[in-house]
Length: 339
Image (cartoon, rainbow, N blue to C red):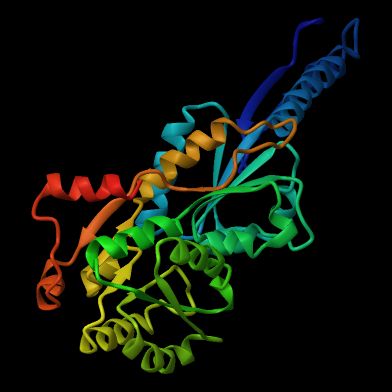
């Protein structure tokens, strides 16, 4: 290599996605300035290290999906679209995060967005955290159960506000007075809002508390003869793949309508469900994330989704002699009454 020439260098992406620089310093065995190659190497390395450090300390959003289910991907896609490039976004799967990786996410200029309960549990630290958390597609009870560790965090809930659920029950069954709810310790915080709203709407809330899913059948035996409507709330100890059939069948035999919180429950036999779609929850989450202040950590308060869909099982409604909106115009009238 001629004296004073710059060294050959190769820049490659390493396996982690970073930049790896290799230099051929062999041409500097002779020459008037033997330190030129080293100085150039150090200058480039310092420039790269400074850029990497700035990127690491810059505000960023880390989306953690519970698993590969289509609903979680729908939330994530709507979230990114609504965020509209305001912050860089990284994606992780809850099951792939090690303890050390979770600790590394606990930074003051990081917004963690867990989608679903598994993701929320994966990133939660009972001792508290510096990163701000915006949970999506989780029940309100789940976030409130975190206590002080969740102070300052936010969410867009999967469940509906108590007022909306009880107004919907009265639209379906105007003569209904007694509304039944089965809850485990995981969702007992829901009772405060439901009880207050039931009193305001001149309804009586009938509650059965269970320790786990094994007690659900006995709770239904006690409750169903006493109620007009069974209201299901997101509670994995009460409503899951092992219990949903017995809930719906026992209620149907007693001719007690069931109000659900998902499209799947309405398809399975609930007379109706109030549903906020994954896309709507993701869209609203993205709008909240745009308001995040990385310096102070401030986020808008947690909230229920603004838009709601009314899903009906017309076959079940006919068998229970329940009148449903006849067309889309009538359904929209009901929807407006829920706002």
